[in-house]
Structure formats: structure tokens, C-alpha cells
Image (cartoon, rainbow, N blue to C red):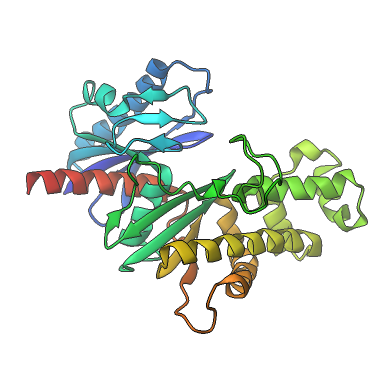
Length: 328
């Protein structure tokens, strides 16, 4: 059996897996993501330890031969699929990650943006399998994005395509970590969801009574999953907060539809766990904002299927595909 190692580097954890040709994860390894002040060499040591653990598992349990290593990283990855230009959670700045890991590992290494790897996984094995034109939008702390056309990831001239979260949707709006104001991710992300809930609590709104009771009045304990759970349990305020995020999501998707005309949008990331509580208001806003509505085909808006492992599955499969293409 041909296997590939996929590693997804997130803000809090580094998740690795042995992935077969069907997209099944047959062995796993996990580490905590190092602090952003950690030296690049230490981060590379950690990644090598994940590779070695998974390689040992493949050999010990006779699972198959490893053909390649794929890395999905949050941040800007160069078009060469080698250099991490900038990673917000780590100290990488123009880091030649592929070259450094290749010198220490026995397999070809490929590096990509984590939204690209998740999109690839959903196209190969998940919610948008077989769709020719796909836009992925990952709603997490911020917003990540990816573009796939006819089975090819569209990375842009410099490899940084898909940074949809920094489209300006409100001129002069809320300040974003990128330095600009009014970015989409300030209105349709996990951070936006928590910020709006905390503003209600800080104003001592009676609408937030149930949420306040849940956290004991400590705003720092409030998280996005808590709001989603409250909404699922029938909390009207939590449901309203999610609907607002969904409306902003739909508005941004309508803008993307004008630019890319996809057949489907696949919505992933932690906030997507809200399911139809998020997607129904998103579809409603999308239809209201879509130019030419009523006279043009409408892209599907679907929830990602592969969950938190989409990134590592896609990273592994993209790496395996690159090796097979090179051999061919």
C-alpha cells in the first residue's frame, strides 16, 4: 500500500497522519504547536519527530511504504511549495522549510497553505468530490481560503492566492491584525463571534444572561464552541450571534461568486461545526447579495465533511500526487 505522511500545523497543535490512497488516516501523531518565539530549528526538530514516529509505525505494523511528506501550514507559502514566506503562529519568515526537512528526511517534501490542503482533501474525498470549480472558506480564528479549478489548486503568481479573509467589506471598519480596517474576517470568523458575544456581556445585556451564567461572569472563559453549543441547546441569543456571522459569510461569498463563479463553496474550520445554524443565514444573505440573482446558476454552499483532519489528509495526498506526476 502506498502511504504518504501529512502534517497540519495549526495555531495550537501539530497533527500528523499516515494516509493511504483512499484518504484514510491509518496512524496518527500529535504535538503542541511551539510558541511563535521558538527558533525555526526547534520547530523543524518537532516536525522531524512526527515524521519519524509515523515512519516507525508504518514499518513496525507493516502498513506500507511511505512515498512523500506533505506539510500544510497556516500562513503564506511561496509558489515553489518550498518556502514559508510568513507564518503568524511561528517564527518562520522566508523559511526554506522544504529544503531543510528534505535534508533530514528520506522522502520528498512538499509544503502548502493549510486551506489549500483542506480544499484538496474535500475535493478528493469529501463534500465537493468531483466538482470542477471549488472555493473553500475556512472559518477559524480568522478566515482562510483556497481556489481549485479542474483539479488544480490555483495558488497565484506568488503562491498567496486565497487570502479572502482580508477582503475589505466595511471601509473604515474594525481594525484587523493585518493592519487594515474592515476585513471580512473581522465580521465572519470565530474571533468575530466571540467578540460580539463579549460585547453583549460587557454591556450587561439581559439577552446574554444564559451565556453569562455558563462562564460565571468571566469573559476570558468564553469560546466559540461554547456559543455554538448554547445555540444548539436553544439559546436564542447564541443562535442570533451565529446568524449574524452567517449573514456576513453569505455577503462575502456573493463577492467571491462574482470574481470566480464557482460551482460550490465548501465551508470548513471550527465555526463550520455550527452547521445549518450558520449555513442557512449564509445562503439567505448570499441570494440577496448575488449579482444577477434569479438569472444565473447559483453555487452550492456546503459544509466540509472531513473535519479537523482535512488539512493533513490533503497535505499527504497532494504530496503523493506530486511524486506520482514527477515519476510519470
